[in-house]
Image (cartoon, rainbow, N blue to C red; front, side, top):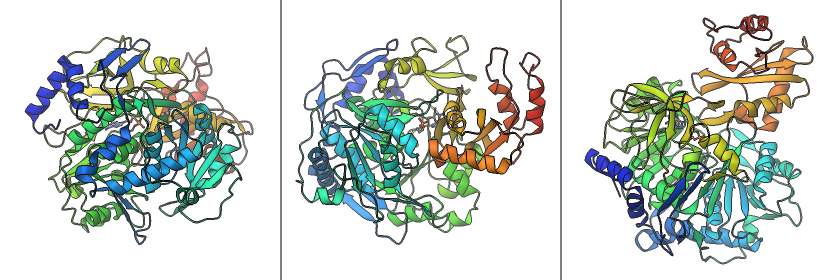
Length: 631
Ligand code: PRX
């Protein structure tokens, strides 16, 4: 299933379009199934109903772990690099990882977890996080990982939406020079959750934490009492594997649902072809397992492929801006996959940090999460890749499960800041305002996908109609990505960015409504409007326009209070960059906020605000313009 040349790609692509079931059926045939499927694909985008390999039976962890034992039992599956460079790293072979997964799975069972239960995981980037994810999959429980930077409120929303029966967490967390009392945050969340019966706590920081009798247990106590073997639960290909919450244009994050069979086939296929990982290579994806990138390219894709991965607990700038490069040299990393925001922040700190390391082992670089600007691309190419490593700019989404548009190693042409061509099996189109396909090249439009691929979103948990409305109702017969894109003269795709009310801050998605709801929770606030604006490091920054009850009050104090409310409601990652207090918002006569005007002002461009005379209160635009916060 490995594509090695451009001809291989063209052949695979053509077959994936002409005979999708045969194409994916052959790839799926390389995995271990307890029972094969009858039909590879049944679908319609109207309901939507998408079923891949329906009726087939499997357990994804058998494919990630057990399957490799005869050939790769003693091969490293995981190399864990702690936050503190002086702390000892951890290495786990495939055999050891399987044993640990089975033990954790038995701990889950001992505490009452069973197939179909939803289990939330809120943990630092420690090996137990990966082990916990796989342990859930082992017993057929549905994992819902919540990035350990979200607030107690955000956890409670997700736990309640999924009606989770268990939370897996840790005592505390180290991230750079920050320390987060993870368990305390969970305790706070649980004051608002009735579905959770058990909390399993992994020891990471050895801080004293409250343990609720009857509810909370220490992982290290439990694990001492269980067996090292745990048979894998048999799952249908279309049984849920996980829920991952992501932001959209409405206030409430939605639980994107992925299923076992299709997700397995697609993440393995894309991992192998995009990154071109060889048997003895070491692969490093710097994402957090709390995001989809970590799910697909730290946990599942690499393990399904028998690869060795690095998992890193810390941040790129701690203890120095050379940390990434030091870790690459330390483990001889061959493929390195990170986000543009990290590259830009390291770029801003100068070349010396990267030039201090050899980086000889690198063969390929990857980028994900947001458009990479040309300057950052060049810096990455010259100083990290030494102009000898292909850069794969991988476009995809939580909803797509795996990489959709990207170069496949150096098998084809690569252009800075362009994701490139679609992967085999992916049929992108650009639509115009009327929903008509735009033919030919050198064109721009709404990016949609017109045919199913195995790891696509199946539903939004507990609310199928929301899934239909969000992704399948805008343009009948198409999956709508929410992104705008350009197809250049060579047919290569360049992602322009979101066309909906989603802001992408450092590769993290937030709905403007979600942040507005958080701001409005502050007692002093009457109303607010949030927009994104171009930010040198983060890609997009958050600009909030806020109307307060007590105009004339000390702005700095109010600002600090509002920030605190957002931290409480969502988490530190959603902190706005700029808060401007305004007496009113530009609204149409029907009361709709004219975000286009607010966006322009936030961009610092007021040259062409369009016709504002039809607004309810046209004068407010000048007041907002005059109060624009530059930096
Ligand atoms: O706008 C696109 C942007 O990130 C969005 C998806 O965000 P999320 O679901 O959090 O997943 C991020 C990791 C896969 C997309 O709608 N995006 C992602 N990758 C790229 C990108 N924009 C441009 N280029 C990319 N390579």
